[in-house]
Image 1 (cartoon, one colour):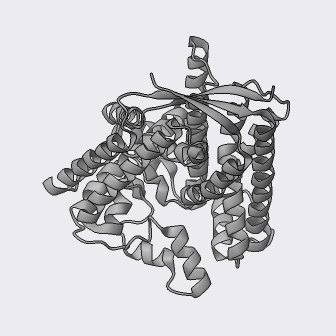
Image 2: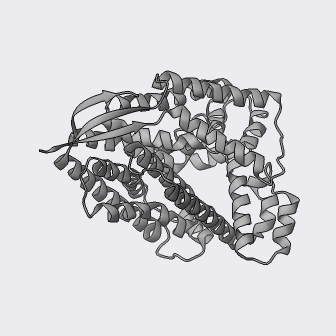
Length: 432
């Protein structure tokens, strides 16, 4: 027998959205941050309207009242072939990406200084086509854990699975080690978590909850340590940056926290406190940035160049044209800060167009959930991406980051590959 049954849990997109909202509100209440509101009544109305339209899109697109399940029959040979193909392409892409960044752009001059490496990458003469191939193929590694978990949920277990999962983690770890960038790791862990839930890989119990909490604390501390090192490397005091950095303009740490960390010798407790407050500042400042820009933006300024950054960059590289990065930086009020999911689309499409874009993205997210529920397995990569981005609606628009857009684009050839491999022969759809 070559067919094995597998069960997929399709999480309701509204549930993921409200988990993100609940987390945001909890941190907003408990975080020792003195928020600085510089919006107006209209900016609040726009923010609420965009969220309402986004929620409406989720409901219309998914058309389900609760989460649901679909049952698929996995072809053993085809599934194993798919995992090997995704692994091979992803590993090749990662090697190309590392080679392009380390040797072509940086000339092999790498160091432990994150900012020096970033400067070398940005000033180096990299190859656009090589960089594109590396970025797209290495993005396959975001999705590799899902298909391994799906295989194992259907009873198809291979020794190579766990080493492959570790290899997939090397993609975001390379960004952390080389540039001090945490966004790829956040995106990877989010997709990884959605993959676990969707495939039912992990059965929740008290022990696993405790382990999860410990790992979460460790990740927050790790992220804070990376930020601390980056701040020192550019010549700033990490503690004072909690008051003076760009991200702290509307979400500065309270005086009591800054005074405590200033007068306290570095130890485990002070390190955890710094990391926790820094984490809260990054999570919470985006909405206040949105209020600021919404109160001062009455027309489109980036004309879709944030939402369609990678396609625009490709066209500009091939046919020539203006520098996309410079145009984006010059067209926003404050560059380098989070503005929730809705900030970039407000810049791109203006207040009215941003409202329609909120409805569109919500509808598209809900539709992807519906397609997977109806056993359209080829859409799983996009379902994973859009699901993984949902908890961050109140924080940042991961669709407009380079890594996020590469992942979205890479999901399209991966969808074709999934369809070609024919991993599921027949389907039984069930809803609970």
